[in-house]
Image: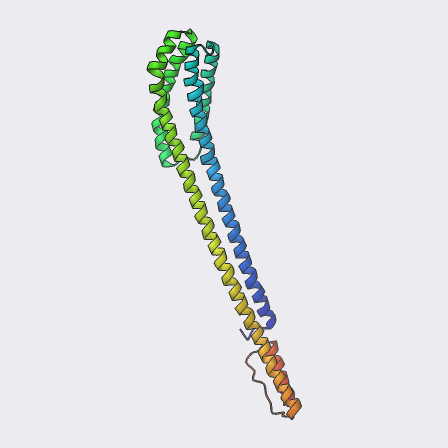
Amino acid sequence: MNNLSVNIRLFLLVGLLSLVSIIVGLTGLKGMSQSVGGLRTVYEDRVVPLRDLKVIADLYAVNIVDMTHKVRNGNIDWAEARKNLQDARTGINKTWTAYKATYLVEQEKKLVASIEPMLAETEATLNKLQAILEDEDRKAIARFTIDTLYPVIDPISTKFSELIEVQLDVAKSEYTQSREQYEQSQLFSIVLLVGGTLAGVLFAMRIVGSVVNPLRQMQDAAQRVSQNFDYSTRIQITQSDEVGQTAQAFNTLLQ
């Protein structure tokens, strides 16, 4: 180290501190990127599917079940009931397709596979309901609500509730993973910052010592020469940098 010039040692010190700053900055950016990625995953693959599942559940509960009771009781007319049923079927198919296009974990895939046959069966049942509404048969709609409606809709509602629970569990897992990544990134940044600062301080102290100590020796030697006229005084040279060259020049001058 003492063979290097003071300029190079100072540049090395600045380079070390700059490198530490760059690594800490990149680590922070990486941590923020991971956090944003986790939030995007939670929103796109968990929050949006939760909304879709709720939309489907509401369409079954309101546009179909509730509508069937209202038309049976005469609260709405047959034309409005037919429109509600058509809107529900269109909305369910569209939203279910959008949900399946999101990222599905294995548990979701299994539930989706079990729901598909139930949806096909429900479609056949809704065709019967559509026919009843077209015929405007009040007795048939009464029997349908008692004998057919709930045995078909309730199992699907239960499956959708299970899917919602899966969304919540996966969202919690994503949050936990993102928090752990953040804590690891934070710990690494702190360790690197503290370690880099300590290394920089030690390096700076060594540079200062390599300059100041020889200068003090030259100062003491100069004082001895000026006070005692002892021209046999020599400075011990241990480095070949600018300070060592100055000490060598001083020794030559005394000689």
